[in-house]
Length: 174
Image (tube, rainbow, N blue to C red; front, side):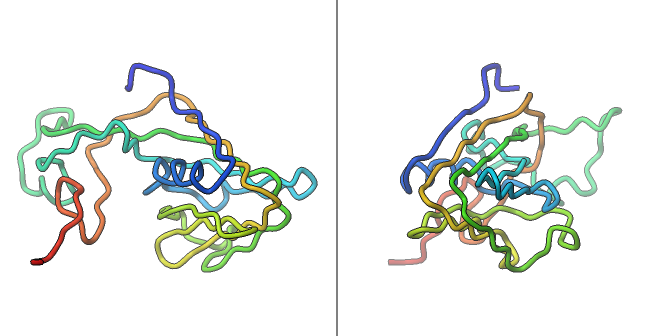
């Protein structure tokens, strides 16, 4: 869909990790797709991420319910912007331990929505909607991120409370 190679990034410090976190914002992750390999000191997961870097900033984006009651053409074609999602692999190395809060991989929700990833001292926090968190105890920040395969189209763009349709922060009167 993008016509080029997918992203391939690595993080060696908190600033690098912030860039990866921005790319992963709103990614959907199945808890069963997370794995901790203690002997290898590695934690990894596969995510279904929204391609923010390719998203057109459009106030006419299709959102859930926007097209309710509208006629559809044969084949279900819709009008409006088309965004993209792609699978990506994320791997953290030099991990000494993993703690999960707010879910259990075997019994947890089908998907977790990733909010952000932050380095805090000797830990990396992977935070999800619904107050779920994965805490990685690490020797150092070592993260590798790579898009896997081709992106696919989606008409749905994630929304956040406190932002307008173009994605800008809403500010009240000064």
